Structure formats: C-alpha cells, structure tokens
Figure (cartoon, rainbow, N blue to C red):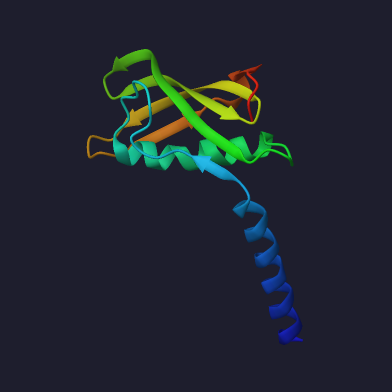
Length: 124
C-alpha cells in the first residue's frame, strides 16, 4: 500500500513540475521602473505576482513578465502604493500593490487583484 502511495505522489509531483517548467517568468531584481521596494521586498512580491500571471496565461503562451513599476501613492510613514505592469501573453495589466516597509529591508505587501486593469497589446 505505501509503495502505491509513493508512486502516486511521485507522478503527481512530476506532472505538476513539468506543467510549470513550460512557463517563462521574467522578474529579475531589481525590477524596471521606479519601485521604492527594497530588493528583498521585490523578491518576496514577484512570486505572488508571477503566480497570478500564470492563472491568466493561456495554454499556447509561455511568458509572464513584470515590465514596469511606478509609485501611485507616495510614502506616508512606512506605507506606500505602487502599480506594477504585468505582461501575460497578449495582455498587459496594471496591478495595484500596497507596501509596508519593516525598516530592516523587508516588509509586507497586499496585491489588489480586484482593481487590475487589462488591455490587449499583441506580441506573445
């Protein structure tokens, strides 16, 4: 019985790993644009942004990229808001993100998925 479970688990891991290997997520730090997030906070944030992009990607498209960052509400104390531009296939979206700096190079973020604005831009 345990050999069967191990085999099923191995197949599940292999299947999920190969599905993600086809996608090319471009999000090296430092990100382009005018982000005020530290390198650590950028790295912490890009995983969630990339995972959101993969949910929107189509089966014939393999690229998700953060193409721009800009401050949308200036820093007040240790909190500010930015718009990160995400390119997924032939669509480009502007994703609002609220950041809070912890003063030690890290911090927290909140992605506002409900207010992302998408447009068609062409070029996969």
